Length: 221
Image (cartoon, rainbow, N blue to C red):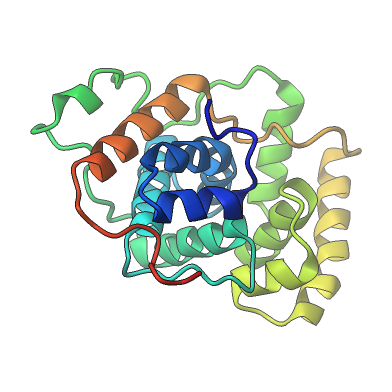
């Protein structure tokens, strides 16, 4: 892709300058991590996908100022978590029947509320272990151990004190180890497949290409 080599802040500047194609790179780059966070809050595959779409559209809106004290990824994840807390499983229907082009790839199998079959038994077991943790401890574990956020960033995302992150993380790791027996590679939990990614990208870009909104909270930079 034309802008695929650029860092997030450079992409944001290009989006603000009218280069909507740069926003597609941001959508592709961060959708998988957003989806995983939505799943850790207990949402089904289809609900999590809807939340990812909502978050990207919120990020593009001028109503949400990009907080430059944090990375774009951290700011984006904070938007998603706020949506997860507010959603209470009452999500809007994306896309509507008025936009069939965005609907074509969806199927009854893809949109059932059951867990998708995963290729790795270990991954499934790990997900089950994580889901037995209290929600806050679950978030701390996934954000730090899987998504690589610092304790400071995790505290910001979860709206808790940083010392709470450092205190709860060892407890979360111990609980997971006890339930699983051992920790292996864990970056593939809640896999976000290519079809889901393309569906999110297609719908988000369709929406922003049909809007005259000034993007990403101008003039946040």
